[in-house]
Length: 245
Length: 245
DNA sequence: GACGCGCTTTGACGCAGATCAAATGACAGG
DNA sequence: CCTGTCATTTGATCTGCGTCAAAGCGCGTC
Image (cartoon, rainbow over all chains, first blue to last red; front, side, top):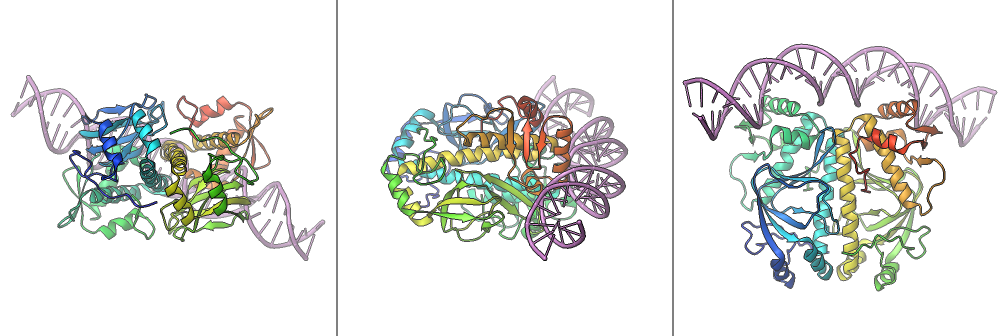
């Protein structure tokens, strides 16, 4: 399979995003154009509840959404963080398997499911592109399993910061000037649900990393990284530095 | 996309398995036949080390294999359990991302990667079938994230038993007669790596479930389940009973 | 400026599960 | 039958993180 991970300007989407219609000069794109539409969500709004009928698939254009599992007794685990260009929904499944929630104001580019599936059946590139994206997500999920199962609270925090930094960087075409900074798009509680911790532990570990000079804070959500290698060390990953998404 | 999850007799593979060549009457199959070959592994043997070049993709025919991440300091997390019919490898990637190890004697049905990728590029059904299988794996990985992040040791053990029971059941065409039994194909240490626990905790929780009458043991590896609902309750899942793989 | 509200930090304490250590079984080989 | 090896169980103790509780802080509204 060829690499279609090119960032394309998908018609009038406000930003460049890695869309399912990567072969933008081909016929598929015009067909996708015909069945697509946009939806906006406010911060905190639920896009779909687990178990609901899924009438569409789509991708995030701007803003951030999360996928979460919730147990009856209220324990929550975030199982996915959707940044711009990420795909939502599953062709071939009728109902949603997780809650999807906008954590910031968000715009999605949607396709009604049935026509999308029809189009997918007739145009090979779309399935191939989706396969590629799904395999990336699977890798990310497996890396996250290592974090959840084996890392300490401090390592979890450090890992989260590097992963979000990497993903934010990959969305920006321009190289950042000056010190590396990261915007955490999540509350402490959401980070806790992401990392399998409590919000108190998240807060304590962030404070500890700050005290030890690994990071510094500007306000509550903005993090500065004076020494990336130091942070990577704290994350406890093995050598590669994490080439995965 | 149509559902190709039919179990097919893939040529001379010794068992029925859900293969990439689900449309067995079509032309693809004969092409797949031409590039396929078999490999056998002994229990404990490593199939691929993380970072190695991947020369093939394939699927498990008999036996069981595991995918694991290992940190420098020796902490290990299993990120996948491969039962017969499960696919191994990633089209479009040169090197393995995890260690793949046979935990029992195992036979794999392999395809050299390059010809497989070529075939995939020219025959849409294969990519569509792989997409379906990958989405199932992604769902399973996300369910596992909930387990790793939020479940107690006892719930983890109960969940593991139900998940392995379900997967073993799906491989058998015949309905089991009499009491539900499960073969655990893993040592206590492997279970611990799967569940993000230590082997001592695994042993203690299995003993506790036995003492409480939730399960009973025949030898070390064989588990009897007198009351499946009771076990499901202990697993702490929400209602659905887990339709996912 | 005072108030309320949501988010975050910090402190004190308890416990689930990790760690360290030893005993028990299950087998295969001599 | 003895012995070494490896998997498993069980016990004793320690500790990282969860739990409960109380401030602190930013921010919009009255």
